[in-house]
Length: 87
Image (tube, rainbow, N blue to C red; front, side):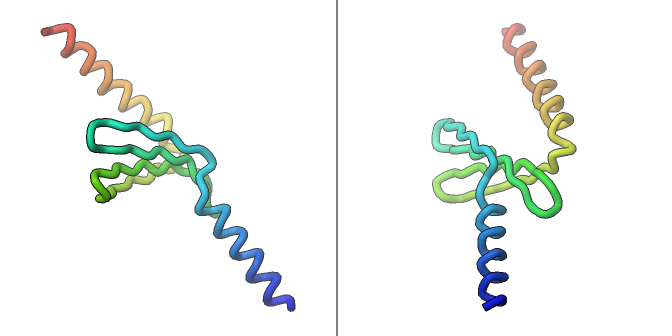
């Protein structure tokens, strides 16, 4: 009986780990981007998945690097904004 309870607890923990804490979707032409905040026994992380007609590519970012990643994206957005004003 104890083994069954242990197995149930492990399965419950696994289900929790597989489910995102928060999800966002971005649709762009034929691509869909999934941005999932997840957690596992090592901590929280961001999982970004690009889906193009069933083909998926994924990157994982530890939560500790999220601010740096956002800053880098903002820098790219700023450069794009400056490029648009040159036209």
